[in-house]
Image (cartoon, rainbow, N blue to C red; front, side, top):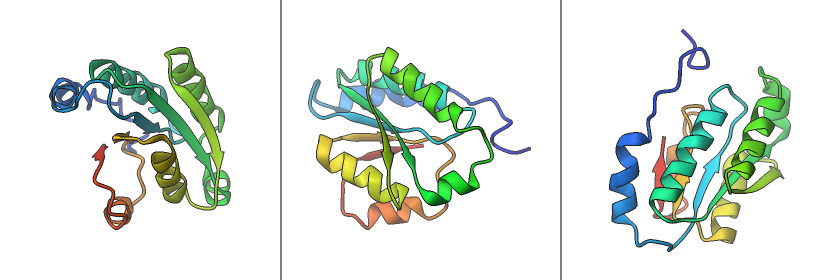
Length: 142
């Protein structure tokens, strides 16, 4: 079964309170990257709950690259629908265009002083190693 066909578990629920308790309230920002898949809206809702529990503002972003646009096997409207949902739930939203998704996320993290990054199970192989190589010591959740 493809991960796109499985229902998304509420993966953030167990960490929401623990993570929120470990952060100074109102210091930093949560960033959620929305890939173009059927779980994007669920990820938005879970990220909003975590941001609320941690008393943090939050940002939702989609990143379009030549590779992601070419390889998309879902209609691009899934990510955009999730972006609109995030905006309706109080997020600052961005639809960035870049040559590389990871670099675009890192640039947004630096620009917005992000302390928590949330991604779904659609993260490409090797990303966590790429992220660790940046030296950024933030929190990365899958």
